[in-house]
Every structure is written in structure tokens, then in C-alpha cells.
Image (cartoon, rainbow, N blue to C red; front, side):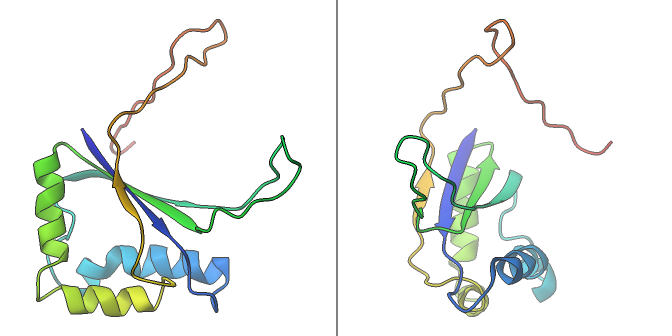
Length: 138
């Protein structure tokens, strides 16, 4: 499994509600709206996590992370990820993607990372390991 994480800041003139609405109903559907094949083929999961700063229990202060959204995409392999990146950067798509991102993000200079390892702590009531099951449909 290969996981990509991106960090985004909304345009300063947008409310969080406008940002979330545009991301969910426009940007995340860009390929479909353009009548093109998906730009993230073979992705197994595509998640947006919208952020709200909270009080740090150690300092008692609210610290802004500098980001409004963390986006995560999972693929079965790095090869699937690389293929997606090539589609997104292709000359026929890139101008449309950049124009759409100007409607949403404060900048195109958004940090993009891959996850090299995830570690879960046991959180069961008796200290046992927990797990999440991903299912499609009902």
C-alpha cells in the first residue's frame, strides 16, 4: 500500500464552508466535469480532512497549523501513484487543474508527502490491537 498526503490552505477570501463546498462539489470532481478519465486511476481511497485548530492541552493556546485541509490518497503501489502524477502533470490537463486550483487554494506551493510507515497503538479496552475494515457499498 502506498499513501500520499497533501496539505492545503484555502484562499484567504473564502470561508471554510465555501472552501469545503468547492472542494467537494467542484475540485474533487474536476476530471468528471471535464469529461476526462480519472486523474487518480487505481486509487483505493481519496479522503479530505478539513481542519479546525483546537486548544493545546499543554500550553493552553490555540496554534494554527497553517493548513485548512489534509488530503490523503491510497494506492496499491508506488507505480500506481507515479502513473497518477504523470496524468495530473500532462500538458492537456495541467492548465485546467491549475486554473481550478486558483479558485480554491491560496497557492500552488502545497506540501506533498508519502507515508513511509504508519504505527498504530493498541486502543482496545484491554490493550488489544484495533483495526479498521474498508468495505464498498452497504
